Image (cartoon, rainbow, N blue to C red; front, side):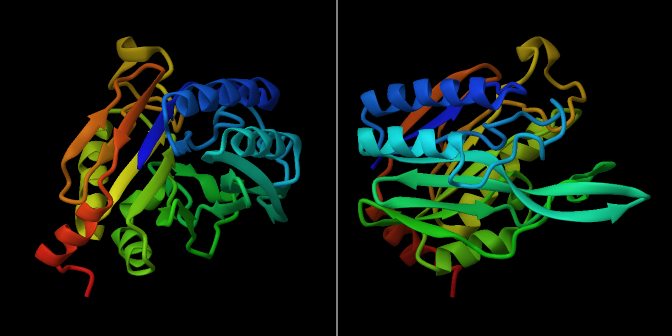
Length: 268
């Protein structure tokens, strides 16, 4: 199975981001990808304004446009977006929270995974504006079960092990990882570890680093560090992006998953 991980830098405009996503989906499909993974927050970058003002359900213009193009091209697409969730009162303010949703769409498929582990860490509280999801999610592409996780979920190994136990042989991870001292090292370690301890392929697509390599290593907030990656079930990186915008590809040998799990039976 050929997959593509799309790394780009989203803006604050859902309309502009939709066009950017469609262009990259077409490019990936033309290069033979059957599964195209785009970053978390692909519809609206973090730090660009209130998320609730552009949040849409899966019947909205952003999700519908990606669905139509994925269906036309015969590919499956995963892309980060935001959906309306609930209204809460906090510190005297009324907040319209959203779900941080990984849209999953293509021929005869249109659903989403709501990020379970909100990024309440390093003095940031995603749960103030994002309602956590509660359900694991898998879907099928060409007879292969695919699991889904989003960004901060990667710090919770049991989610990845449960997806593997549910039949996932590939786990896709849209992300928008904060930069800062030691953060790239943490990302590279965690992405390899989650592939290894779930004995699955991991396909992670992230936001490019604002400012590129010149800003690398500086605190950025949750606005991207690049380094999209494909990792095999033994934790070996098959391909990895840098800080800028690009699309990376890999041909996944799905039969290798069963062989690795036989040699390393850690899911029992």
